[in-house]
Amino acid sequence: KVIKWYGKTEEEVKEMDFDEFLTLIPTRSRRSLKRGFNQQQKRLLEKIEADKQNIKTHCRDLVITPAMLGKTIKIYNGKEWVMLVVTLEMLGHFLGEFSETRKRVTHGSAGLGATRSSKAVSAK
Image (cartoon, rainbow, N blue to C red; front, side, top):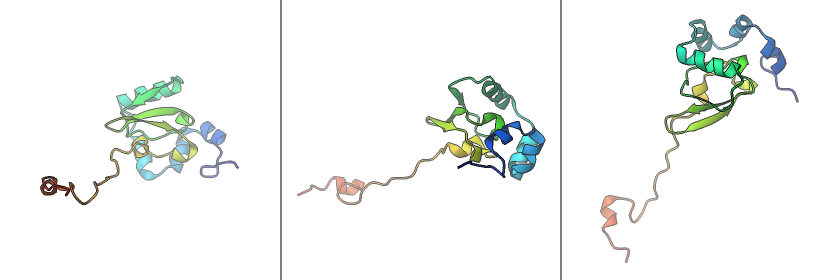
């Protein structure tokens, strides 16, 4: 089965010009790209275009473009590096959306020892 993005295959998306790509992505991403890239984003894009391996970045606010398709990027979430393989469905989204900064809360079990006051009580 062939995966398509707005009716285009991965090869067609890679050959698409940048202005056509801008018309297909959501407004927030389009506005961000029209403003241009900052220095950190430019350095990351240069590494991606040079086909470097083991690319790490703190740049979570970069919009995923067709040049990134198939690349493996490690994104920092504040504690660890989260590996991301860029696929067709990710186009137009931000890198930070795929690297969660918060973990799910797992609470301790209720009962003896769960609170400060019950730690002093003997188990017998």
